[in-house]
Image 1 (cartoon, helix red, strand yellow):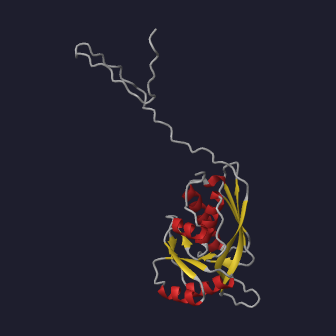
Image 2 (spheres, rainbow, N blue to C red):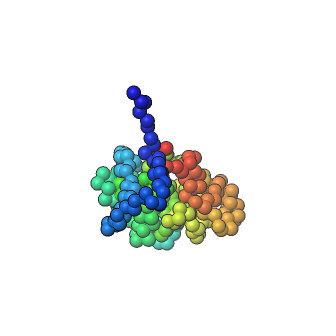
Image 3 (tube, rainbow, N blue to C red):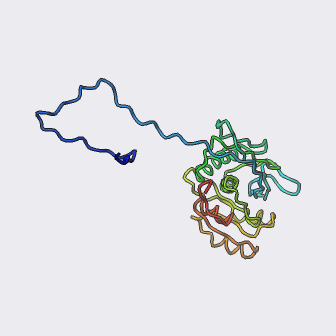
Amino acid sequence: MREPQTYSSLEVIPAPILPQSQAVLPPESKTTAVRAPAQILSQPAPFSDVSLTVPVLSILVRPRAGSITGSWSGLVARLIVGYRADGKGPDVVPNMNLMPVSAESLRTAVAVAARAVGYDSRYVTVRLLIPVKMDGPSAGGIMAVGIAAALLGDPIRQDICMSGTIEPTLEIKPVGRLVDKMNACRDLKKTTMIVPDGLDNSHLSFTGSEKAIHVIEVHTLAEAYSAATGQVLRQAGH
């Protein structure tokens, strides 16, 4: 008995070449070619809700006691990231204190963070709770870091604060009034401030040294994530 032979499913064995007189042409097909189906992403692994606090440096729309409208303040927001089983997300739920520009920045942060870690955003829910009304895009970077950290299971360092917008290209873009935001960072008793590069931040580093705040410049979400968590931004599940 001959031993069974095993062939790779991708192996193609060419047909023998017949002399022209013996060659038989196949009948002309009237059907269109069938294309291979597009690859369907598998449903990502579910996870329990992750709740973490995120330091936010933003302009106040309404003043708190002892502050004025339009002043910069350090806030502690609560970010809750969960799993949406029906895959009809992303489900982004800002509370009523998040004004339009900040709400749009949060939605961008969700999409970018999920894509950066390879997690299908349709299975993600995100809630952001802040104590006062807030507007502006400059908290987008830290929100993206927080969402990615929740999906990867990494804690955020307790000594950092951050200011910078998040872009669909995974870049952290410059923002203004960083010295004012450094004061807000100090109010939160943070000792490290993550800021976008691309600006002349030499004066910021000097000011930071006076206030005992170390300044770290970043250009991408991956760099910001590493600075904020001490971990590498990677694919979920790896």
